[in-house]
Length: 394
Image 1: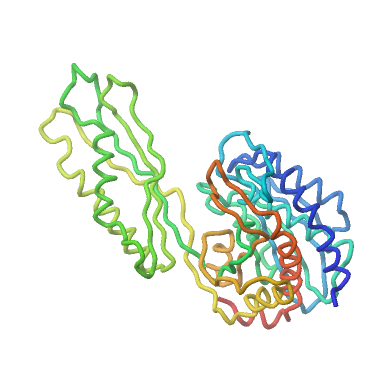
Image 2: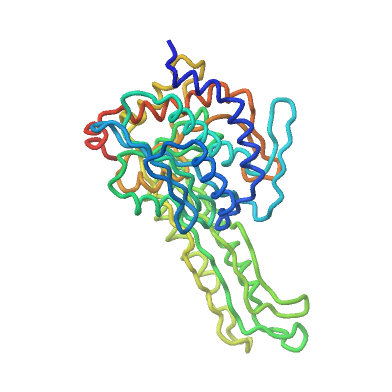
């Protein structure tokens, strides 16, 4: 028989869908999440009943509800930021779907967090430990998990396990963190006029050599452990008639296996440097400088599949008509606590597609099961004995 808390979660499904639209339409590019953070803070204030509610200097919002001593203290986090740099975030409905940039990554996750917050306060579940509900900044791209890392620092010792909410992940439970290393790779030369200084090294051409050199170390598709390499953004040059004095690109390397990632990292740096050996020699163009500046580091980590936290996520799905989820790896806010040995995972509220693309979309029908699932999963984790969670660190 459903509890009052579970009935409240089911009742709130239409509100969570409506909240998803409201959150999506508030722009929140990485490092500019403040407006969305203020809105979420105001929603927590409207819900009320918190033992602590704050918004920190970088825009993280944290609501604290004290619970039963001896039970696991759980941090639940949904990131506020999106990959889209501007304010154009309209949402449209069509055939059971919501279409909008960032609607699933991660506006629906934030909406689900607020739905759980309302249910927890209006129909308090019994026998749960402390809950820290956080809407955090800096998960995407060059945010480099700075929001969740700040929360971990400010609330060190206040929680025993962490659950990240990523809306698209209804049928996935994260059991490991995909590690990533990111660089800004730049080339500088003397440059000059395209006619008068012809023959001097061109930074754009040299950068192209470095990018092309990465093909020799690119991991094969379908090989385990999986690893990837990607040149994501290119900048450079002055004008069409200037020998480019500078150019740069952003490099992303990933793997689910730390040793594989380290090897790829080493091989990529060596390949790029070798590609520019002798560049500029005999041209009268001065020194050619290749510079690598690290701009991101996400650790790889693994959760034991028999960990009580994973078991709590699986048990919460029972009776909801949900399929058995994939126990996979991901790159989410859960990486940060997992890498310190703290139990962490990531779950979601719906399904969809085209994340990080202009045509991103999510299905609304799965919310009917997804909202109760997320709410039940959080409570299941917070009902674990604190000793059991602390003894089974990653």
